[in-house]
Image (cartoon, rainbow, N blue to C red; front, side, top):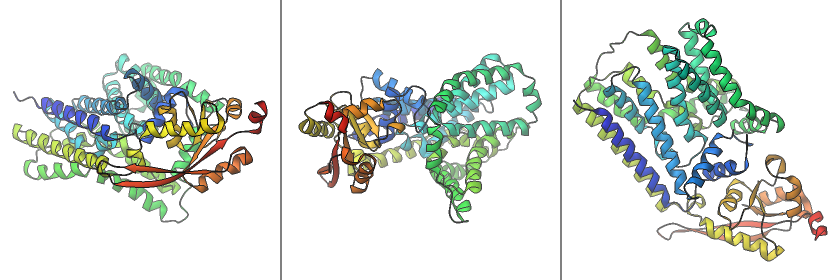
Length: 485
């Protein structure tokens, strides 16, 4: 008998290898990835941007593999593997193994499952956590086993500890429960209450951390989505742009599937109302809820927020537009998805080879060493703090010759894991991209920050094409620390 899950295994392994190796062409880790490692090192139960789980995961994996940059590329692809596995497991609740494998294979036409996963962050972790959570919810709801309910409760808390917008998934599941008229049944289910208690217990330390730190994370979330459109049409254009972006990112899957469907359409045999509701709601509601928030508020949506929302699309396509399965068709689908993965891999390789973007071609070790020298030449002391944007601060924190603490934007209140008094005593190297940024720091600290000095940095790609950028640097040396000397 033909085993289609072998094709899924081979395609998953192929994508894993490509997108674990190709990013090594970069000379530096992506900014979000550097930030996640630093969070894991310094933050206990929260950060000023996201909950702490992605930081814990990144830092532990980074240290386990010897502080090697490639560890984070592997971690990203492990998230993809986990997500694909649980999509397959969830699909097995509706299909035989052949169609379940096809549903999982279809995910590889979505850009979120390879090209966009190089930069490990909360979104990449979500593509593993959302299918896991949905799987254990479905198992709990349909089989009512205590172990499934406990795992579901734990995953609810882990999702929230990764990113707050995972509440979109839980609202989608709640919509399904009401649509299926199962709310009263859950209210009488002691196992559901146990799941809720587990989620509350696990999330409580983070809630306490937020209270102690003025709910800074929620302020960041609000600032990222904007303050609302000043024009009425923003209430319509922003959600439309977001939905269009998700369809565009899944275009390879959608086009491939419907081309195959035209010649191989089958019949939808299942009349299970509960299955139909669950698949339709969980496939459509997350993106719809995001769009609805934008319609109401007029706030712009980041397209990357849709990262985990498409995990049910392969299942929904197979369920509502079934193919007449055959070994030949499955091999064709697997081959086409493999070609798409290859094309995305070629695209990322080209980006690594030809770009002169500082985020790709900065020699992070050499740059960090040079900035440490600037500090030592000026002060005669080892560098302990660097104040700048996320990119430079976290770079020196990861690649400096000794432990350097990143004081992002030179704001102790935005970096509560550091001792503000120690920062004031030790001072900091200040790095800025331009005069406007440097003047911003000067406005905060006045004469405690020296006049800026200019430094030219050269960025060269693999074909010797060069980009020149001028940055500013200076020194934060408070009067108290000078007097102490």
